[in-house]
Amino acid sequence: MKQLLSYFSIVIVLSLSSCVAKKDFDALMAEKNELASDKAQLERELAVANEKINRLEVQLNDLTTEKNALQNDFDIIDKELKALRSEHGRIKGLYENLLTNSGQLNQDLARQQKRLLAVEEDLNIQKKRNEELAEDLSKREARVAELEKLISDKEAAVQALKNKVTNALLNFNEDDLKVEVRNGKVYVSLAEQLLFGTGSIAVDQKGVSALQQLANAIKTNPDINIMVEGHTDNVPFSRKTQYMSDNWDLSVLRATSIVRILVEGGVSPTSITASGRGESTPVVANDSPENKAKNRRTEIILTPKLDELFQILDNY
Image 1 (cartoon, one colour):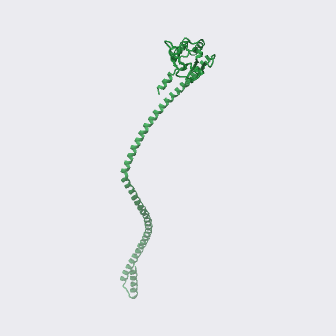
Image 2: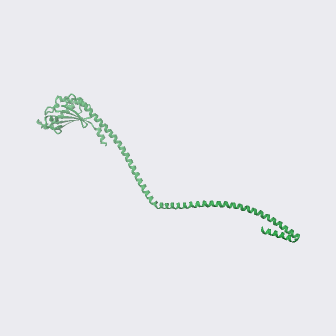
Image 3: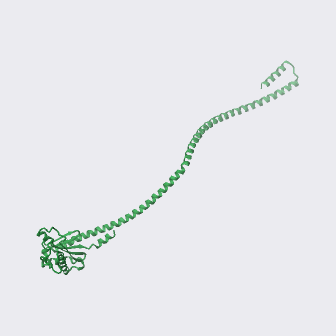
């Protein structure tokens, strides 16, 4: 641009200082116009270039801003990446430790599983055993309840039997006849003075009456066993015969005499037994006439049949 202005100045100076031929002038003017046209064209191009420069500067500013934002994001991401790498290293170390210990852990797990299976098996066995015990206990409880009921029924039957015998023998003196319950049995104890004379095996009429009343009270009850026991004091037997030589013989024969009267009174012979104990089981010491009289007695023992009770006990 400066070169063009210098050129115009030279032309003007030359035109003012000297006469220039018209042809040359026209040539100069044409050149001037051409230069003016080039100038205008260059100015337009300059404006376009300046506008482009402005746009590029705006784009540069935008790109710079975007670059700074990207750089900031990059710094953040780089920081996070370093943190992730550090965490990755820590996790990798843990993983390697796990791999190192996995064999031992697997062995421990296998042992624990084996132990658990054994415990479960023992538990199932114990559970089955408990079920069996519970079932057995239930059966035993049922048998015990049955046994208790049977015992209760027997005790009630013994008491009822005792009451029946007592009521049947109310007209006899207590010194001659006593009814009591011992060990689940009814004992009818008859003194010698009610039944026999001294050394005799024949029952007196008063004794026959008592035995007949007793037979009438018990003959309708088939569920009792009857034991007739003869007892004496310790005074030696003096009236010896071919069939009776001591107190033992005397006690047995007296019991047999009583059994016959009871059977004649209707008691079943299959449920009655005669026995003699002689002087072997005194109730008191034979140290006075009164005590000896107490020992000379006959005991009729009434025992309820316990077949059902024994059958239950056998099942235990």
